[in-house]
Amino acid sequence: MEKLQRNERIAALLKVLSDNPNKIYTLGQFTEMFGTAKSTLSEDIDIVQKLLEKFQFGTIETISGASGGIRYFPIMGDADVKETVDELIRDLSKKERIVPGGFLYMLDLIYSPEMVSKIARIFARAFYNKNVDYVLTMETKGIPLAFMTAKYLNIPLIIVRHSNEATDGASVNINYVSGSSRKIQTMVLPLRALKRNSNIIFIDDFMKGGGTANGIAEIAKEFDCQLVGTAVLVETAEPAKKLIDNFFSILTLYGVDDVNMAIDIRPSL
Amino acid sequence: MEKLQRNERIAALLKVLSDNPNKIYTLGQFTEMFGTAKSTLSEDIDIVQKLLEKFQFGTIETISGASGGIRYFPIMGDADVKETVDELIRDLSKKERIVPGGFLYMLDLIYSPEMVSKIARIFARAFYNKNVDYVLTMETKGIPLAFMTAKYLNIPLIIVRHSNEATDGASVNINYVSGSSRKIQTMVLPLRALKRNSNIIFIDDFMKGGGTANGIAEIAKEFDCQLVGTAVLVETAEPAKKLIDNFFSILTLYGVDDVNMAIDIRPSL
Figure 1 (cartoon, chains in turn yellow, blue):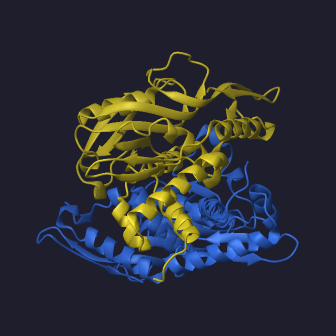
Figure 2: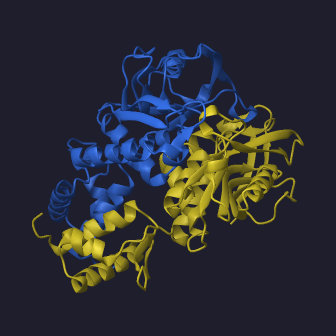
Figure 3: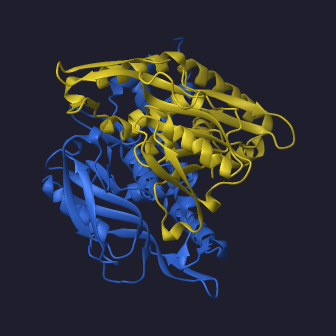
């Protein structure tokens, strides 16, 4: 490759870091990639760091020591968090979202790549530098949110399912009780999915009673793992007391009135 | 914001385009964002375009006319496609992946953000400029691959499910026959999920008989939509004749021998 100009190096550096959030790169990997000296690269990194701050694109962390290097956290700035929350509230308050029975249709939002990316950045910023090993979710609707959170944290996603498939091999099955309907359901996780003694977080689109989150904590224990955090897009105001304590939500749903066609949803943060 | 240097503009330009693949930006949006003249921005775009080519990061397309602008396709270069396929074959040929019954454990790969991103870039490069409106998948295991493909194409993901939830509202249900086991299953799609007369593609992790893909084509018809393409990570060599024709796979699985502990998997491309 021909020698790169500074502006090319800087753009390529930001591109590689940005496509691989939370991944540690040694300086040697970049000096080789760009055919440049370490001192020049350090200047490049400083320029990228300043740029990230200017645009609230996130931050670069320097890790010192033998296994040191740099990594990029795409931490969303407070202004962008607020803008995203406002956008969500505006969109989720639309009357046409009301489904008979007093439910709120959200599938278009929680499957939208653009919106999922924004929400996942809000989730992820709570867990950088927290030594999380896995993101868990319960099939199905929270999977895109959980996957993008895992991508921003650069850790594996694990999908807990309602039943086992032959291709998954031996599995651990537990029964758990839904926090709101009190219905007993099954949770299945392949034995080889999760390493012992790991820290996991649970990501989902919706929490009512917290039964699923509680089930995830239970199944994690069977693998000698700890549930160290939970984040959901929407929690319901009622029941106020959930089956788990250690969680946060972005929005709180106070009610959907399908007679008067009114939705009451507010920021939780 | 203080005035930006050229190297900052170029890096920020690439960052914004790269975080939002396949999204059309007008030049005005960038001249405003960077406080710069159109002629200067055009030079910046040329530099970014050359850089993308050098690193095989993808390409920028210029759309002329009143609603014109630029958009970024993260098209994976042929060398990177080959490297990804080689990596997959190496990894999927490991004996410890064999599950009793002659199955191949793949969950860690198809839930890994890094690997899913690479595979989705291979899927997506077949569908840029093909006027695709939605990516569909059938729950559960193909969801991460389908979501990332949707993200690279900047179009909505839709997850087809086995049963309906109250929160989804009215839905269309069809029965379909699995191509390999001949078992009858149900496919459900909320009525409001899909706009009439859309072009859809189907993304999944695995295809044996092609029954699911065929079912997706059937349910699409109920919405007056057309299935214009299908891509799967792995197809099985047998049956050679699938229920659908218009699809491609990245890998072909010839056999898993759980007695002699041997896996025969080869590139399809």
